[in-house]
Image 1 (spheres, rainbow, N blue to C red):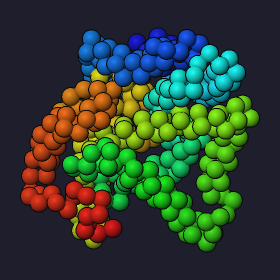
Image 2 (cartoon, rainbow, N blue to C red):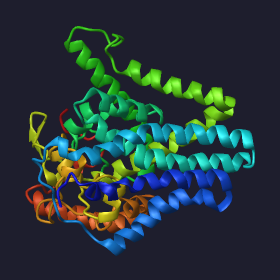
Image 3 (cartoon, one colour):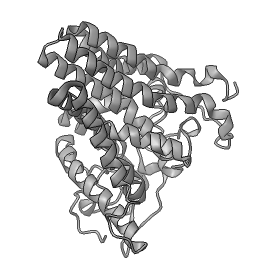
Length: 373
C-alpha cells in the first residue's frame, strides 16, 4: 500500500483517543482519572502482546510530500494539547465537582498525555528543517516547562550519546531514581553551556537575543501566566504538576533508550561514530503506533533527520532488542530489581558481541569516569 494513503497513516492517529479520555476523566473524576495511565501503559502493552512485531520498513527515500498524513498528526497535536490542558483547567477549577486531591491526580494524568505524546511529537518536530515545525516543537516543550530539551537533545545528546559527556545515557547499574534527579540538573546545565559556546564562537555573549533560551523562557512564563489567569496560583500548581509528570515520562523513556550502551573510546577524547547498536531497538507494533516509531531508536540516532514513518527497524544481528515495548520497559525501570534482572544479562551479551576486546568496563560505568572529555 502506498505510504501516502490515509489508511497507512491511520494507526498513528490513535493518540487522539487520549483527548476524549482526558475529558471523560475531567467530567467524571474518580476511577475515570486512572484511564490515562491505564490506556498508555497497560492497554498498549496488551495490544503489543496481541499484535506482535512490525518488521517491515518503508522506503527511506520516500519524498516528504508523500508523508502528509503522517506529518499532519504532529502539527494538529499542538493546539489540541493546549486546548485540552487549559480547557480542562478552566473547567475543573470552576465547576468544583472534583476535590483538590482529585484535581492534582487529574493533572498528573494529563502529564502522561503531554509527556508520552506531546514531548514525543516535539522530538519529531525539533529534528525537522521547516521553521514552523521547530517552533511548534518549542511550543510543546514550553507547555511542560522543558524548553531546554531541544538544545540538550540536538547539541549534546546526539553528539555525545554513549559517552560520559551525555547526561542522558544511563550508566550500568544506575537506577532510574538516581538517573532522574541527575539529568534534571545536568541536562539544563549542558544545554545552556552548549548554546553559550555556540554564541562564543560567533563572538557573541550568552545573553544575545539569538540565544534560544530567551524563547524557551518566554514560552514557559507565558504558559504559567495563562494558568494563573485561569485559576490563580492553584492553576499554576496544576500546570506545574502536569509538566513534572510529562518530564518524568520523558526521562523514563530516555533511561530505557540507551541504558548501559557505550561507544568505544578511541583515545585523545575521541569515540567511534554512532551506530545502530548504540541504542535499544523495539519493533512492537502497537506501542510504535502510539510513540510514532520512537522505539526504532537505533535508526533515529543513525539517521537523525529521518521522519518517523521512514525510520527503519533492525534485526537482532544489527541492533540490541528490548524484550518488550516501552510501556512495559518503563514500568520495569520503576522497579530496579526487575530492571536489573531483565536488562543486565542483555547488556553483558551486548558487550560480548560488539566489544569482546574490552575486559574492564569500570571506566564506562559512572558519570564521573576518568575517560577524557
